Length: 87
Image (cartoon, rainbow, N blue to C red; front, side, top):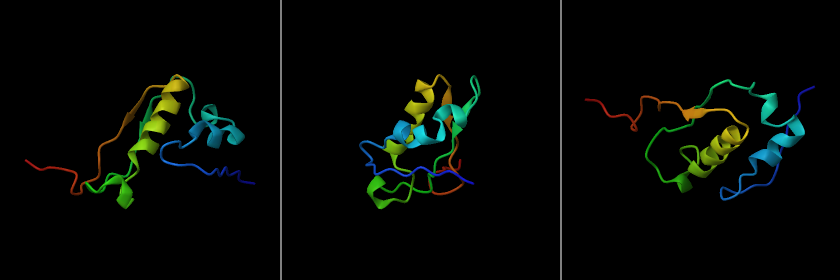
């Protein structure tokens, strides 16, 4: 049976650790010393309030949770949309 975790959160306090705690924490998803790539939705240059891209505070909270657990992290390149410039 699949487990899910749902919490009430805000962008100013996403509560990533609280969300992952019932599932065993970050350690259940990433093994020690693995590199973590956060592939966020960066489809266009819209304001966060438009909900077109992954909200920057959510990305920050996940990256901080990954780093706090002792794993290096980075963000991946955006898809080939309006966020990409071509030379």
